[in-house]
Image (cartoon, rainbow, N blue to C red; front, side, top):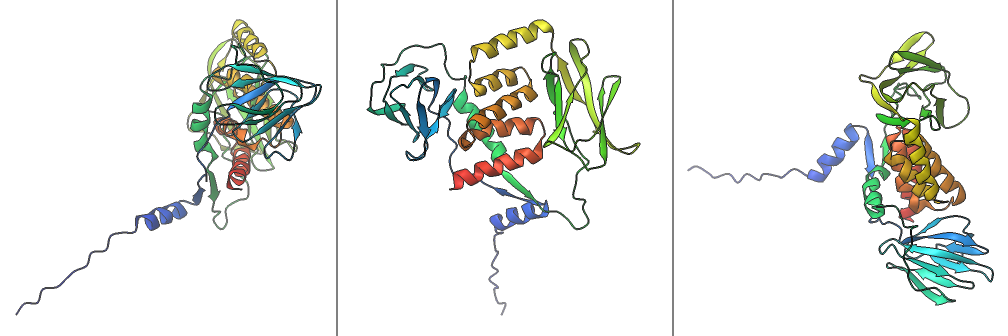
Length: 323
């Protein structure tokens, strides 16, 4: 008699396979704990005593344009006033003295003081703000690299942004530091510029001598002594703006007023990634605890290939949303 064998076929554990693959390639991704959200609006034109709070207990002054998320609190003093711009409607409301309000999902919920009815304003939020926050969210993932035995502590494979724009007033390039003894050569078309390493700052910053307006190949070589130890496979692209183009951009920056994020948006739209980075940094110097605004800054650092700084900022953001 022939016995029938019951063969049990086990399905592979997909989750384990994915985890093993991630570990094999040297990193484990930390997923964001919350659904990304964007600001409900911004508080601008602060006069006198104007303050905001994330929890209704610890208050900080509003000294220039400040973005506000749902759950934030706002108050003005006896000498205070300002304007709130709603992201969804684009309409403004004026806050008089002695206002106390909480930011809800749809706008301000006022508990004390007088706030005007909504009115049209030219000082709206930047276009597509919610979409930009959602898009930037992918760059907030933190990847922990697993260093293999014998690997050097520093990295010579330093890269410039793939595409970047400069002008007479915004001629700086930035890139990550390499190993302590490395120097650099910026190759622009047929020109080459030697750049020493730097003992200060988080990255290397170099003011590029500008050629005529137009587009050029751009690459960064890394040297150890007289030997080139790293050069990219393909050059990037550099665009140099004409004076008239820069003047138009500066007019748009003036129209953005004291809103550093709106200024950064104008600059990024024209490929001016380095001054956009400077604008983001200026915002966080004014509001250092405003971690929820970090995604657009993190995306900017990613575009500039400042990966050490990008990872540090992404970790701050992930720590904040995990609290």
